[in-house]
Image (cartoon, rainbow, N blue to C red; front, side):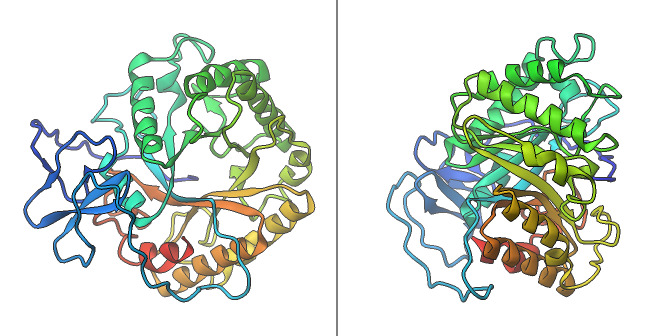
Length: 394
């Protein structure tokens, strides 16, 4: 995300393991070996074959044994929020942002400067029917500057990344691996396609056997020519495939913060026409916020139609170039105008047939009262954005 400082307080450490699953926590499902009893006031509720989840006892959901594989009963369909024909997103979910926090603290202390996404948060969104999680991380923690971009990975940080990725994918979700570095490493813009290729080949080799991993080449490059962003992305695509990762979706991002509203005017439109994937499984990732400067730092939207307006040129470009789009970040305030704008934008995307996914910015346990936080149970965007602006598009 653009122009938002990650300054957060440390969380108090929990010192003991309890035999009860927490609120919103997983309590059953295929392969589950954790607690199957919820804390008082919550009940273990079957959601799908991978998940039973602790929900408040006031819920109207049907409770079944935690390890059951019984099919979920169908619910009454809700009226369509969009007119006309639309294609539902294959990938729909949230960003999980926290492992990239504390960017001035390298390597940083786990639990103090950064943390990993909450597994109960993943369970919550899977239970709602979402299926995609973009997991941000910091390259300097994975590839310590003392050994350089092409040096060995830090084993502990890599293990943390692999753990949350496996948690998502083993439960049927898609995990987007997101180096959240803006095409900058250790304070310097990445320019070497050879080094960047080697880094991506090394990383892709760690996940090449997991078909539910998605590779996001680089979060929001900026202040570099579109041609340079293209060259680095193309080199990374080639490296990922050469590592043996043949089946996974790859997301490429352009310069100028990969903004949808500036995709054509920034030069990305001309540069990325030529993007190629030998396995033909690539999408153009763009981001879009709805405040006046498109930064996502204000809860006030320009208008109730601003999302569809800002996406229009990018959508036309995708159609003209026969490419797929992926909205890797969208965010706005929890108010009537913004909710109408989000719905209008997502409708336009689904009606176009060229956008394959969209993700809300952001979930994560350390967001506090941030207006776009969708971290359960009390994130500011949970009460209105989730049910009114996102879930209707499942």
